[in-house]
Length: 187
Image (cartoon, rainbow, N blue to C red; front, side):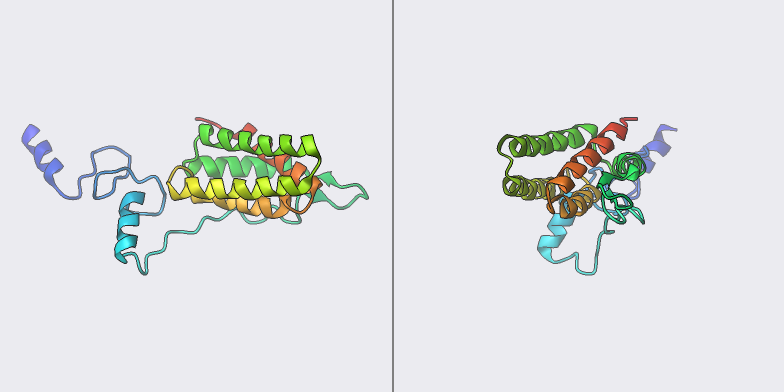
């Protein structure tokens, strides 16, 4: 039996026997739909070997944020129920499936709270908008380092496009992000 096991381990297609998908270099592949790790992809990209290769584009579910954050049936702008429940649950499940950790999502929520605190202190939405742009930059940076999945960047981009409109949209985004964090499960 030991001889068979050693022959199996020497075979080029052997990936370690577990359910973790591995790159040819031996590193774990943490992005679904790809067959190489982030390090190898970057190396091939530098060599020009990735032409024609396109990683699957992240996509939020159909109908996500359709019509924006607010229920426009009334004169007052009340935040839609979907912002708190349906969309928040769906996004949290999708982000978890894509490999986002609870530590990462909580860290970014804390950064968003810091932007909110700055806004509340000086009541200047332009400074909050500046903080939102820096927030997008920070999310993009972690995606480029393969710390957060591309779907998280997409989630942030779509929501920042709404949040930068005015203070009410900004507050609605904070409520939505808080709901996503609340439904995010470690299991």
